[in-house]
Length: 196
Image (tube, rainbow, N blue to C red; front, side):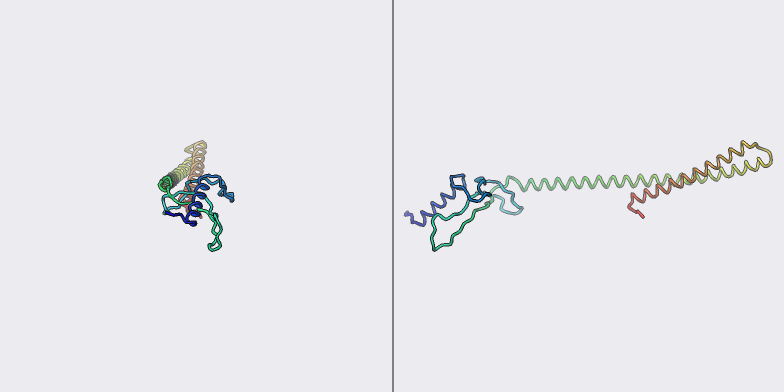
């Protein structure tokens, strides 16, 4: 087979480019391609060609011919292998999604716990409110009875003073229970997200 001048030039051109891409004596003019390795793994977007080979090189004419246009440039990458990048990205995304689901489940459980605790506290405060109301009624009756007995001369001032003290303590307990109940209702509304 006879080599024509064009085939010989093409062969020499490809040989020079191969040597330049494999770290031969030829150095690229641009800074970004000067330190480029002969082959490198690059990040490949999903659904691109899965296999790649990257060769840093630059096209320069071996001999200028007036008939043909002058073309210069370089091949950025030719995909060949991705090193299981897609499966690693898929596993990473699945792990992140699972972690987010666990976080949401934990957050849901904490919110449910806080709302239940607030409801139980409000319910207990409501029940204490009824108990202190009953205590106030009974101590008011005891005070009225002690006052009547003292007025008839059947009891001493000590019994009347003790009945008055019990009534005052019951009134204080009633107001305290009302305050506690309203505070627990406000906290329950906060936990339910019903801030006014």
